[in-house]
Length: 349
Image (cartoon, rainbow, N blue to C red):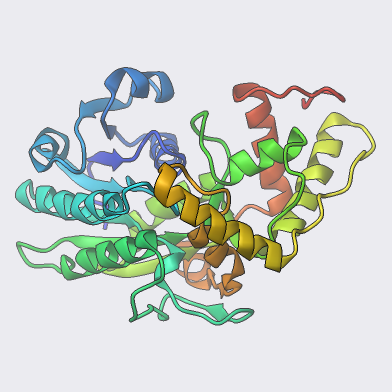
């Protein structure tokens, strides 16, 4: 899919964890990068100086023309990954309408290829079983976030083709991403920081597939180079329970600090209590408009238990995920440098 000249690559969501990793993967290859950003001053502090910044918003179609003009590739990583918002219609406005606007802008400016960051949530699979890219769930999922990503996913597929009004597309389906990225990235990075700082008294049951963020960026660029129109690729480094992630994190911290491990992983909260807290929190959140302690969508995801199979990305793209222990050490070093590490019992080198 990659032409012989050096095209401009537009990245949406470039100040987020995955978008930032795409920017890095492109720059390593010496490819020109343009970023669509809402706040130029904030983005300038987060992105390298050689990244061209264009002000715009995926929810504002008119603001996308300057960003899309002259691009050969659009990497659409912007979106809302949260499992709860005060106004659930925001998921549709950003994830669905935003994707529709990107597709429209790409067509209007004859962009060659659209590389779309989807999610593993669009697939179906039973707990404990493996699933691959063929297992698209035909039924609406249980949360506003999941349903918005399902609809956006179909928009990209519908836009796929080789005709004058079509786009060469590839869809990437990353697991829960962690790793070096903009300060303030939540998700797993936040979990690792809270665990490091002793702020997690109990763990939730269940687990999730995870993937090192730089590997996600690599996967996107590899797909842009090698994918056929409409190809899908799962990007996952493996499934882990939260207890396993906590154990690996504490082990990595001890290794980095060159000290004996001093504490065990927090215990797992019993499921009846988890369900009670989640339901009560959801009810209170409808009144307070503040996030519940345990969003129902988060609990659903943690209890899904299906295992994604990333064989296609390995075989077709030559994609290789970073082992969890190695990725954790790099992430903890990065968080210590960029997000602050109290390190009351020793520093992380």
